Image (spheres, helix red, strand yellow):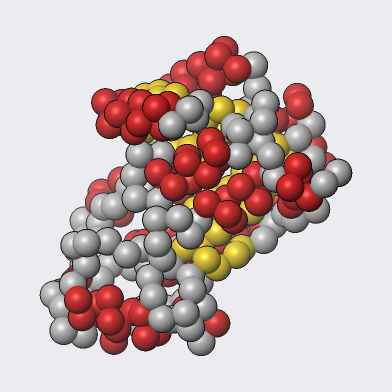
Length: 263
């Protein structure tokens, strides 16, 4: 097969949790441009539909569904609706994240539990539910969206000259994204016999207008490419891992961080 044909996702169905958020939009766009039918799902169905409508104007098949990852029944309903509409699920991108318990190290236990419920427990559950669909097809690709913060410790110098985190960031994000590294390996080990691949990418910092100038300067100097990620830097790796071009790749954790973790 021609290598460019291997990258096509025509006839495939993808779910992107949190698809209307920071990284989600470019993930959805990349999958749609490659030919997939893409479902974006989060609690804010209005925002999801707004994003989906814009992609449909560009002739991409993007559809919105409600999903509350804190609610097991919501996960079941969403997955069933995707199957009802398309008859299959080929790609699951675990992209949604609850940004709670970030204000410092000392938190109420309930704050940590709420974060872990969405960012860990619910990810385990939705991956298992979707995997049962993929097993019937004897194929599938699960892509977990981690973070460079799950691969390294905290670089406090990045925040010099800013009031970000007030010098006392919470460990929860590092803990959750670090755990995703080995969950990816575990799931790949369990699901490989059913020809289901599980990989994770670990993006670096995303360039956004609200970021303090000092942080952008500090962080960019810490990378080998000298910049933060753009609004298109994840599209290629997502399509690659979702497609037949990566059919012999599973259990990997790939930094997409401009060389941050290479230094």
